[in-house]
Length: 540
Image (cartoon, rainbow, N blue to C red; front, side, top):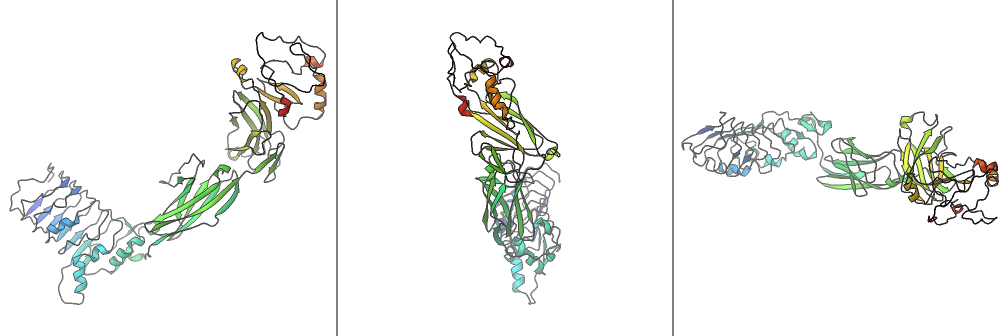
């Protein structure tokens, strides 16, 4: 007892009939462990750390009657090893880690009168394990006869039984078993599934197993962008199946209650699966703030040991409005009164801008739940990129803009069309290198009152609210200028955007010009080349 033994001692006398080694450090039973003690009848090896038992570990023990291996760490037993112990009557394997009993497990234990498999990890057992047991077979042959048969005690309690269709035959065996087989504890209980937890075997009726059958209420869905979308499929199966979703070759599946994240297509997808009846489960895939990029086929697949089936749901996410003309937006729903957003350019960078917006009181009544929609693209583009901004965010940076290109950016409360004043129209300049040299940001040209202004430091946005009368007054207030000593033609209507250096006042309407006072023209730097001439009026 409590000896520091690492292996079975080799110098055991040959006439020893009983060996008891407990609370030691035995980790395995190798081949021929007791080949020198053929008279051994009782072997107790309880509460060791035995994890491996060789198939020939009981060789040369024809007289062995009792083997106790309680409280070890055996996850499997070589059941054919008992061919070498034909007289074995007591086998104690409780408090181990056995999780499987093969159908032939008891075939080589014909004289067993006590078998303890309690407190292991057994979940599913076939009734054929006991139908192949010689003790049970003899009891069936002699039923109704006078022949005396020794009772056999069987302990199977305290195992985590899974009470589904796979255990149906074993449950029927337990309900019908009787002498000479006696259950030490006949009140075996279910550990799973959840709706059967704690129920006794005699209280449950298990059905036959069934291959999964998947279905969906609607296999074609068209929804507006920005909404939370839930796709649902139903699965009938026994035993309970594993269910997962696939989209664009991506696996979407619940894992230990966590939410799987797919950064390629879905912003965040949540899969939940729950039983709604004994043989039916419901699986839901949540797509928050759906985008047009989420359009596609979503496949719900279910599988158990009998096979697998799937159902596909086609999802089409459409933008809440389409940009068909440069000036018009068609909303899918009427805008709420007062849901107005004021937008401005807060910052300029070398390759883009940063927008900032503020919602009116009516639109921002619940700022923690208000979503915004940004539409960004070329001014003349029929369709613009749609970007959905979550609650609590009021800035967004637009990058990778093309030079000398006219853009339009609109901001609106989600599911509403942008109103006047919620769009910014601007033109990117082409003289980027000079701006970088002067540590200025991107050269953005905008129009106010139909005048072309180069504003590298302070930005003005052209909106649809400019007064028409300003268009007639401004040309008269801007006298024609001479460049390089050559006068422009009197009827010329061209104005060159990109020929205006950053920070230059050439070509701008100044208050002094309006009052009739002029400043001397700026001198050109010797040897400096002008950017190529481009008619910016074409951009408008």
